[in-house]
Image 1 (cartoon, one colour):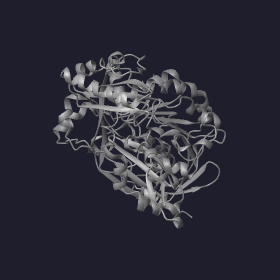
Image 2 (cartoon, rainbow over the protein chains, first blue to last red; image 1 turned 120 degrees about the vertical axis):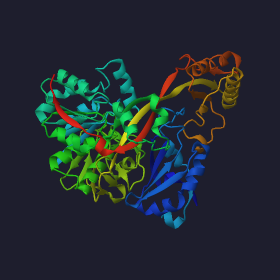
Image 3 (cartoon, rainbow over the protein chains, first blue to last red; image 1 turned 30 degrees about the horizontal axis):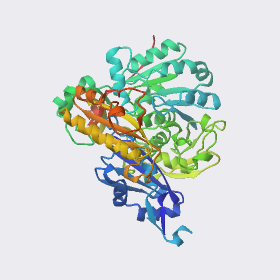
Image 4 (cartoon, chains in turn red, brown; image 1 turned 90 degrees about the horizontal axis):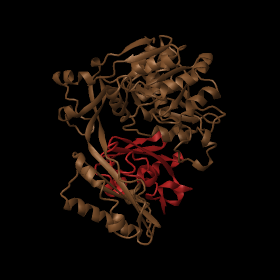
Length: 109
Length: 445
């Protein structure tokens, strides 16, 4: 079944220059493998479309049941240069929670 | 065990937070982080206008307000409030709180040394873009090295009640009391990494105690009196994150995980002047009400280079808004955007970027926003930036006329024309750490 990422994870996002980072954290550690399988850099890139001009990198933190994404050239120049409302990428994390992911019924149980 | 609190996550954070931290319960050290990347350039401009300024002006009055309590309870204050003028900041603290012993850490300001560095062959390429510094040399406004916890620990060792630093790292403010009190050396890699990660958890103030937190945010108690974070540090490098019981907010593993991931790059290589911390070694455990125990942290040695925080003038920008109401609010705003762009083109103006958002439809979430097919109103928000101040100023005159000569239903122009602002951009680069020599001194009036 398809569910929004918000069902199994919470997020926090921020900036480093023109790079936005999104931490994606499983509510329950047993759902971390679903994050690893479903929330790929390619899908994150597609989710944000032309908002993100550079590549998307993914790092794994199994000890926290979390993934860290770096979205490069994602903030319109970043910091003081950017013309965007969310020049610091504060809302990118919430935006990612709308990503639809595929899970089996047994995985959610 | 020592208790280290963070009472400011940035310059402009809640003024009452450090006061309540001191009033609500026991504390050994009060760390205050005032400096964001952009803050240094603002302070540099203030120093150019008045050589007695260039620091976080909130800080000396705050110390004066807390002076009797921190003396009675033996709380030491450690802050990077010095900005680009730590000595002036420290002197103002002494003037307003004459009973306190104040130490200052200097040596992070490398603005006068940039040409010397270039002559030595340090290209100081931007860590994001790879461009050499020479390309912006004439437009640089400030340059500071990030300094670590050891100079701050040296300042604490003078017996100072208040330590004022310039561009120390955020994490160093929390790590420094541990280095000083526990006698950690550069060889204590895991302890330094643990203290650094403790600093990362608390450096954004209430973001580790329930502020800006997605986790059941509606049920977090008493955000109006949210407690700022406290680290209870042990000599072996383990620590607990907590808050005063009286204060609002929440501390649990979910909350701490969110903050651990905040502004994180490669989790195995969190590089500071003090060490390289490995976030994949962190073990978190709920250890009671509003208490998270943190163990297992490993780290590597300090890097051979230090990072510079450089600000430079990068042109001009202005952002203007108009509100379009139902019906066809979005279509009207889109038509107005096309008209503005056409009029700018007609008068021969060009910019590095013209960027349009439709507030209420896609401003924050862009393509990821949920559909909003018939919004009751939309705010058109157009920004431009470029090297020519006159062109940006001319743009600011193109929005309000649309109220009368564009699509129907425009309003929300009461604030008048948009303001033209100078863009001060941020550049980060590396230099060999031997180039940076810090000095500690006690300050008297």
